[in-house]
Every structure is written in C-alpha cells, then in structure tokens.
Image 1 (tube, rainbow, N blue to C red):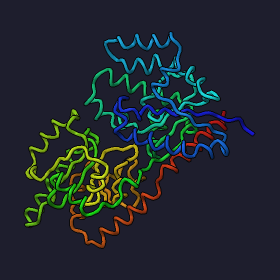
Image 2 (cartoon, rainbow, N blue to C red):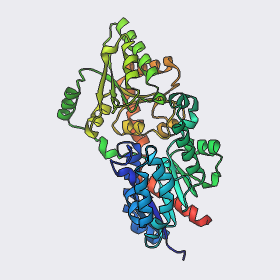
Image 3 (cartoon, rainbow, N blue to C red):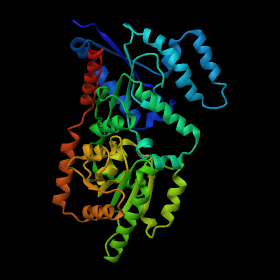
Image 4 (tube, rainbow, N blue to C red):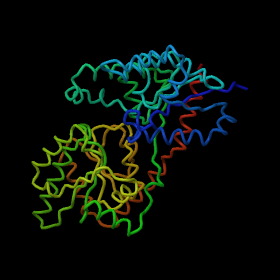
Length: 407
C-alpha cells in the first residue's frame, strides 16, 4: 500500500483583505474547490491515500521562526513592492516550515491562483493557471500597462508556472496556451474545468422579480451584460452594436430595449473611458448601469433578460455563461478562447471583433419566437449540468494522483 500523501491547498483568496480575490472568480473557485475537497476528505484518505489540508498567507507567517518573522516585518518598511517582496523573497523561505507543520508533512503545496505562487519555491508546488490574458493579448495589455512593474510581475508569474511540479488549467484552451506560450512539459498539465453553484440561480417568485426590477430601475425589456470593463471585455464594440440595434428598432417604430450593465465597475480605472464612449451614442439614455448586485438580484437579472451578451476577446473559462444558463437566460457569446468549450451548442456565438455579428445576434434574440427562446433555455439547462464542483474536485484529485505516481 502506498504511503499517505499530504497536499496543502492555499485558501488565501477567501480572505477579503488578501488582494481582491474574494469577490472575483478566483474567490469562488477557491471557496468551492476547498469545500468539495474537504467534503470528500474521508473517501480521499481511504481510497486515494491523500490527506488534503489548507493554509493561507496568515498560516505561512505563523509557521515560520522568529528570524523569518523579523524579515517579514522588515519588508513592511519597503517604500514600494511590499506584496511582491513578501511573495517572492520572504514566502519561499517560509515554505519549508509550512510544509513541516502538517501531519504528515505536506508533499505538495497547491496555489489555486498562479499569480499568488512564488516564482522560486523551495518546495514542490502545484499551480492553477486561470488564464494567460496578458500574454495572449500582449499588444493590448502592453499599451495599457507600460510600467516595469507590470512586466516584472508577468515575468514572476511565468516563472511560477514554469517551475511548478504540477499545473492545473481551468479549460482546454488555457492548457493549450500554457504549453504553447510557456514551453512547459505537457505531461505536467492537467485540465480541471470549473462550475457554478446552480442553487444560487433558482427561479424567484413574482414578487421578488418585481421588487428587484423596481429597485434597479428596469421598466422594460433589456439585454444584459455582467462583468468587468477592462479592454478584453470588448465593451466598446458591445455599446456600438447595441446603438445600431436601438437605431434599427427606432426606424421600425419598435420599442427600444434597455442595455443593462451589472458589475462593480465605477471603481475601475476604465470607467471614465466607458462614460465617454456612452456619451457618443445616439441611444445612451437606454443604457442602464446597476452596479454590483446580490446573488438573488443577479438571478433575477439573468432570468428576466432577453439575453446575456458576452463579447469578450478572451476568457480562461467564462463563469457568467454558466450562470446565465443556470438562471434560464439565452446567451450570446464570443466564438474564441475557452467560451465554445463552456457554451457548447447552447449559445449564439459571435465574432467579437465584428460589430455587425454582435448586432445580428441581438436582433435574432429580440425577434425569436417563444418556442425558440425556450429551446435555447433548455439547451442551457442541459449544458450547465455537465459542470459541477464535485467534478472539479475529483479531477483535481486525479491530477494529484498522477503527480505522485510519477515521482
């Protein structure tokens, strides 16, 4: 019988004070993965001889000796790059103590966000690659982030992935990009698709639907966008496509639907540019920003929309597509990156760089029969059932097993 192996999972992303992970897809991934792994802990220990434990940035600090704790405090006096120094200088020195603090000692440290992993660790590491957007869309991101800090951070992230003993990728697309752009051994790469918690998107009672729409100022039919507004999200083309659709509706004496933008975008540095783009549109008065919304309100927004429009230039996975499917909302999404893997045949796909393509897809959803609308909803419901956090956990376990079998 093989010896029990200990894997320690970094759950720093659950701490709201650690970067901004907790309120993003990273936080959701870590929350659901750690929950699923711990729920199957007894069967893992019994059947796979795996002992799953967890740690965080606070655990690392507590597990080190006084000398390293003093070094960590000294870093706080640095005039710049405190987080980078902690992660790349202090943290690697503490990982041996961290590994030994588990019983039995940890054989593998799993960082489920590749940007959180040290580039030069002295322990075997597993990293989850969420996406390689700055590399895939290098021209777009170099122009927006010309500073040496941006380029240095990307270098460290690449090194952390390349030096990892095991690499998990959240889609086949991300796996291909990792092998191609970072020249890593494909034998180290394992695909572990993500999921959504479908219980968050259950059908809401009529009273709640009315309440949410009144609260958010939604008075008529609408298309929905949920997410950020950084350049790869392609909001500029979405706005222009929507304006074309609205003008067409006006010419035909049809009611112009709203375009509802949901998400915490007002604090984004791209927000002033978004406002300037909206000002140039003929039908800017029918664009409604609702900001960050609760899970219940988000469920209502999806379920009541004509369709969810997601014209992203690149996604490592595409959580919102599955959210929309779970909430019984037809989807329009890009035909690139990981999105076809997630959407399958359940969505209308578009060329995100072609405004006409986006407009035509929106027109199609606006005009389809109720029977056809229900067909898209049923396809979405079937599609979302193919993804589950339990499956993500088991694929992660298989990856751990493969790693240990090769040692």
